Length: 69
Image (tube, rainbow, N blue to C red; front, top):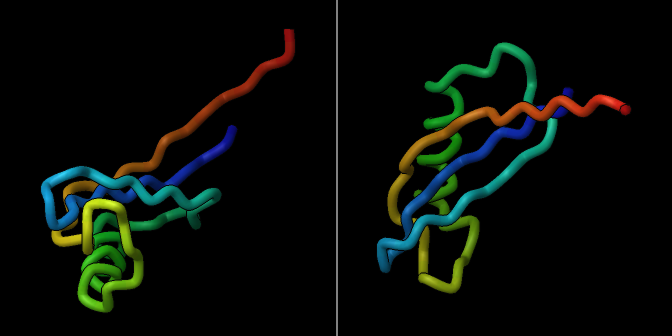
């Protein structure tokens, strides 16, 4: 099973941008991720085509199971 943390942001023009991180640590909390997202916004760490990231929309962990046939 593969896990990916997806952090969804809205940029200055209202377009959503997703930042994906592979293999997030077990037990990661929503509060920890939202704090990290707010830090990303406050420090203007990433630039997008739509301008600066302006708002944290949501965070989710996506899992993918792969089975051989």
